[in-house]
Image 1 (cartoon, chains in turn orange, yellow):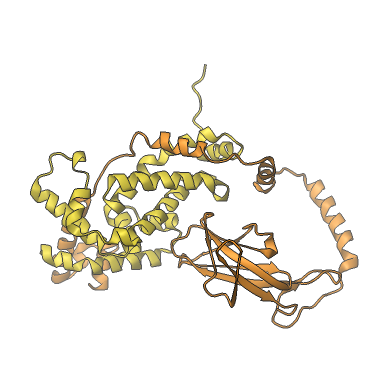
Image 2: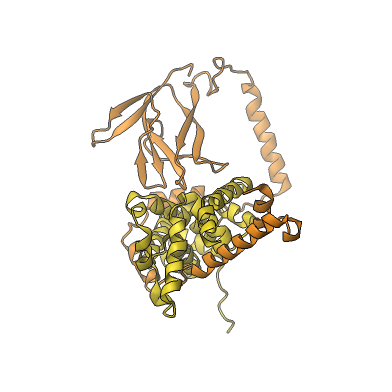
Length: 209
Length: 183
């Protein structure tokens, strides 16, 4: 099948622009596509769907007050501020930051953050191939096992990744797919039993990465 | 007294997240048919489609906080369902189905006028779809059976138009054997 024929079936090339052979094949394709549409099973959602979904939701636990409060904190909400307020806030920020302008430097090739009195943070690249996932997060010792770091797949190729700040040390971690399935990183350098019959991936982060 | 104004999707999502769990039924009513139609075209089974749609709605409720565009919650739910459908079609048990078994899976009660010859064509056509990869099948169904535009599909599936076209093109190539059979 050549590019012109695909272009026609995509709706970009009119039939008149095709040569005789391609036009015949296009006609056959159009007939087959029509048969697909004709053969397609039809029907709306069953009448009991709403009732069953709502019944299943009833069995889910209500979010606790802490989670509701957290949800309120992280949910975007419009905020109105006057230009005068913005100006004052900017002035306060400038005054606060000026004494701390001494530069810091991390080891070569490693992104680090944190003041001189704090342990530096190393940014670690987490990658997981999960073509059918609709969300992927990572949780580990570095996040108190909360799946608070989400990975992204902007080009839709099924490879999810994120650069996540981790303090130096040895950390166990797992991926959480679609907020329901835990998966061990298949490409981890080391593993350890989690005490519940599964294996955690292990990540060793040095001060220099 | 003025009639009640229907809540927008964004308002419904906000109300649910604020604790009005019952508001979720509005989303089930608004998008149940659309989701079920797609699941039906992916599975050719009323029972499997209904089960997948129910799972999609429950999963959608559980992760509603991660819906970044509440005004497009319908598209977001559709994507959850589409992922469940491709996983389901990919499952080993499902792939063991034989083409001849498909005829019994199809909803004959939905079209009682279907004669034996038409039923056979329906089973052959949909049996051919079973030979595609789940991603190719999804792309072909959305483009050619549901008649959606590339831009619309790409937005819902979070794919580039170029990637999507490639999937559809590969699906056509894979189905070419069937075309020759019909010629």
